[in-house]
Image (cartoon, rainbow, N blue to C red):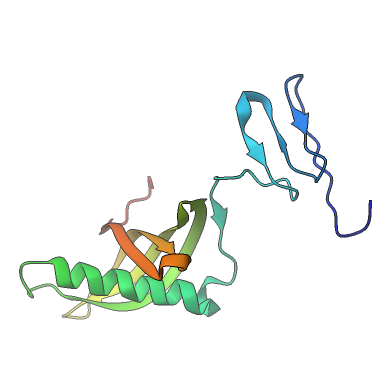
Length: 134
């Protein structure tokens, strides 16, 4: 095996290793060659400098403002401060967004956006105030 291949170690008597480094763990959970769970969430590194993630945060706030019936509390996007992503039928992003009310009051929100690059589409699925339990 060369340095470009990774080995997957699976514990438990029902795991099956895949010849290319992926495999199926107990309970049928798939792992890729890097030992990451396929379909599981992964933390996005360097969120503040990640242009795609920051753009998705701005998109989320714009969509939220557009969907509201009133302009009383329009939000102003400031930054995505944390993000995770998950491979689904596209890429689902879980964003922690810092925004300010039109009066400058800082607030934090949780947004979920699905991006389908092959279809050139993105959709805001969820946007609400952040709570520590998310």
